[in-house]
Length: 301
Image 1 (cartoon, one colour):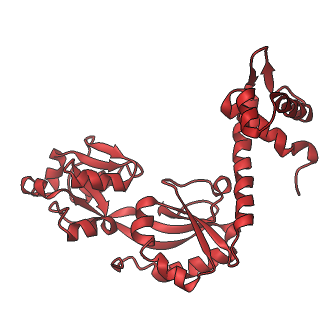
Image 2 (cartoon, rainbow, N blue to C red):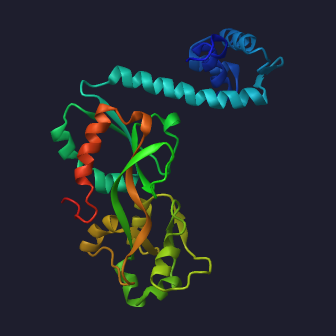
Image 3 (cartoon, rainbow, N blue to C red):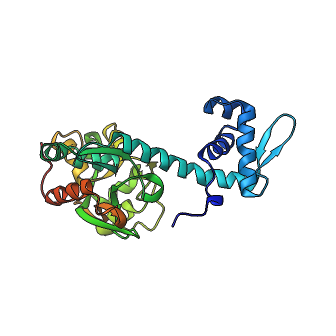
């Protein structure tokens, strides 16, 4: 059941409040909404009457949202974005349906993209829209139908398909190789850390029997693409997923003289909320992706 009318203000009033909160002035909100300042003020007054409370503090020069109104504006901002995204999908919906997919940048580019032409040939009527997300998120507020996630598969309210496990390999530029002989020696050089996996280096060192109880030095990056470039230019030793390192290792742009790789704690999954599992486009994509989920196979060239 939809909430009673008194809890469902007009979109125009909500847009006026959200714009005033985000832009900080009635004149800026009016310009963005193509309204007069008076019209913006009237929309907010109508919202105040419906809510039965003061939302804006008024003086001669400025309108300022109260603290509760600011919190309210932050919540409705997400709702307005969801409505806009749903409307866009409705207008642009292809005959075969569409899938809004969140991807991890490195895994999406190196693992999914080389395989995706096969899906396009098999299902040309389905459109896949992709956005980049670095960490798990709330499906309800982002509008995605599914996501490529990394983790242990314990996301509440979702179903998942295992795509591949991950093996981490320490690599560096060739000029560092002669000065490094074993796993213990990596502690003498700058380590390149990925922000989303703060324990990756400690896990690898432990797997090699190296004491990593002391804080590890080095720099932190938010994406593997940046870490790869840092390693290529000799800025330190990178711990990379095997699928991401193999091309540079084959071309000898990177080397791995520090010892074997080690299995990571997590794995890559296709994840989707249970209430969207019946989406026909998602079902077709999931069925196709299950045939690609062969962690030990090399990437297509």
